[in-house]
Image 1 (cartoon, rainbow, N blue to C red):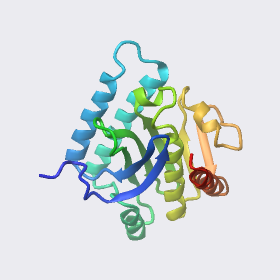
Image 2: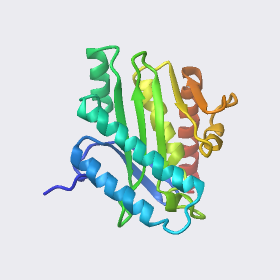
Image 3: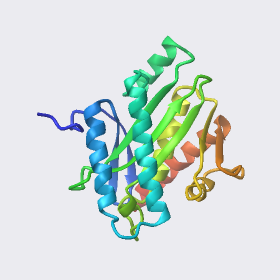
Length: 220
């Protein structure tokens, strides 16, 4: 029997991180969500004792993102690929479609899920970035093996936004995530809101990709 996240599952991309790379796969079944919830439980087990604010944020956001995706899946308003997302938009230009992108590290023994990202295509063709969350224990490590994962997930969201012609990416910042997003936004963040218009997110996507190429060329 194939596992919920079998090797036959189509990947939608990869993200370079300190350890090597992680694969991005879109959630597409109840069974995958059951497996994902178990892996997030193991995230929590790994930080028992005295989790910091960022670690608590990671757990809460991850669970929130999975819950929202599952609600949309029950309503048949999720996409398992960018192609399917485009097809749903072509069928109904006002489609509200949610995506759950899961970052999987094949080089880890368990849990292999090291991060996730939830975003939603809105009826007026923007992308609402709802959650970017990373494994709370690994993310807090010095010289973390998944360093660069958050940047990579943001790059993926920008790529999808460009592929479906979104005018903007917008989302809510938590108190602890505002610092991360401020690294990528030219204009100051308005309190708890981030807005990247197409003139912002396309150059940002290209800038991140260029840094990856430079790093690969230098052997780092």
